[in-house]
Length: 301
Image (cartoon, rainbow, N blue to C red; front, side):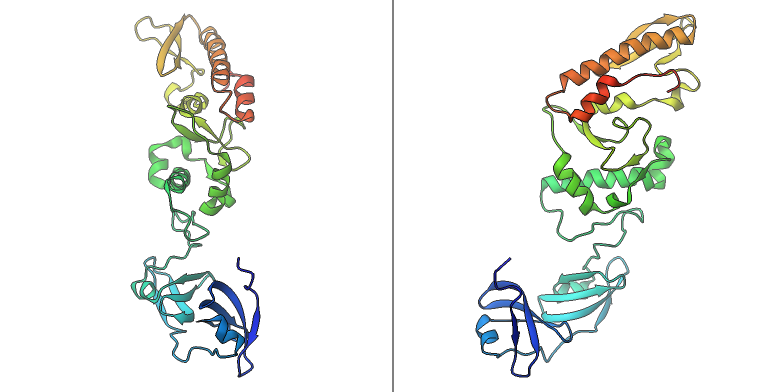
């Protein structure tokens, strides 16, 4: 912020104005105290009281944006620098041409599934912010998009904390918590830190490689009443246990009862979780490492 922002001046009519933006000595945005209108002027004019409100103004003009929201011009310093106000009180800065086209967006409008909104303009400007936006958008959709919930029943009870309804808030967390591991696909996990959690929030979420993220999947819909890791061997008609390890299905054995099959699976799976913890220890957050080391597979999972 320039040191002259905040300086106050009076014109020859006694009207007070304050510098709100200082681009250069010849390009200064000031706001009048009495009606909150803006003009662009020079520092020379300010010092010599040679500045006045715009005589020609489009303040009060109303239009709809592309989302069908009403917007009203509340200040018109010049054609390429106007301020519009939406019904919810949100102020946006744009050009008059954008106003006519209806392309000015309300960053507080819940455009995504009636839940998600950006919270601030100009956030998506590079590959990193686009990556964050894609993660945020899919998180919102998997919890609130009826089509996704219809095809993926595991997400039907999932929610997103109110703070993360705003992409701006999510992006601030993303910048501090996202990391990458060579040759691994990173995913947002919600239930490794807090077992059984169904709510996406800063307290419970973390980024983990895909091979770790899939470990907390219980496949309850597919296995029915059978314990985790147990299915019926169609050839032997016995209960078999198996585990997916490093992308390959590892057959553990056939058993006469579900309990023996489960405990054989439990032993191998818990060892594998510890193996993953050690393999990725230098990359993953400490809370993820601790969760993997201490994870206990239960027959009631």
